Length: 302
Ligand code: RIB
Image (cartoon, rainbow, N blue to C red):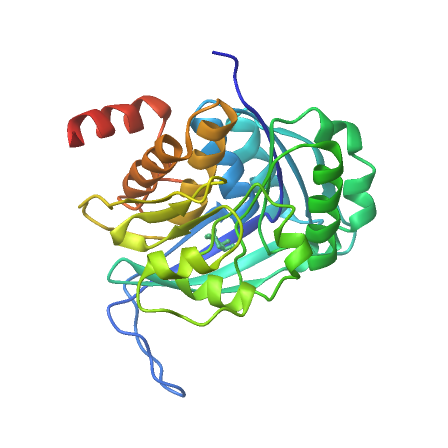
């Protein structure tokens, strides 16, 4: 099988992770349990997930002029990801994410820094790179105009786009209609579309007019294909250490499988398994599994 060619347009951050048993109240100071720093950013995380799962990956994004940028470049190089189009922006800081992990779950504040210097013209200048891809992946940690321009360009070239709309903002219907897939969680779906939250995930998906995969944490994921058929893949029970990057792993796995020609059901099943494995280690990229591990896990889970 030919390797999938995936281009990720998105953010690169350094994640500053604080572990604590208790979240401080406003105005309160607490002693936490540990601090670590990792390479991250939703874009870079998706790129690493795709590379580990067997795709040929190109990353388009911006870093600042500092030591963190070097750390991010080295991490992507180590995964054989093409960083030719990761631009260094003079006098800017690389993006950072301040992450607090409590009982496996996270709270994140992103300071975009250089990520917000990725402009529509940067992507439009890379028409050939987009045209040579099997799939484009996007998220919302770069300017919204750049996300929109990328979707329109890829659509005009007939290249499918998966958008993970996180952090969520309202998007125009015409733009949503140009996506191959959107992959929000339930609250992101409500923000992106303005749809009311209904009682069941199926009701929500029925209301949404386009193909969609809605992630649901430990409950797995719900999907609706281009033919309107609904499905649900339940989650796996694993020991959760850190959920940071689980969504990025999910999106990467989905993109790889779909680019290889798998059905939406197969791709979602693969993505649910990959993201379950990813939460068993601290750090967004540390737990991202290799392809063989995901296949073995699916086999073992029956
Ligand atoms: O999705 C997880 C990512 O969100 C983290 O790596 C952090 O950088 C933020 O962008």
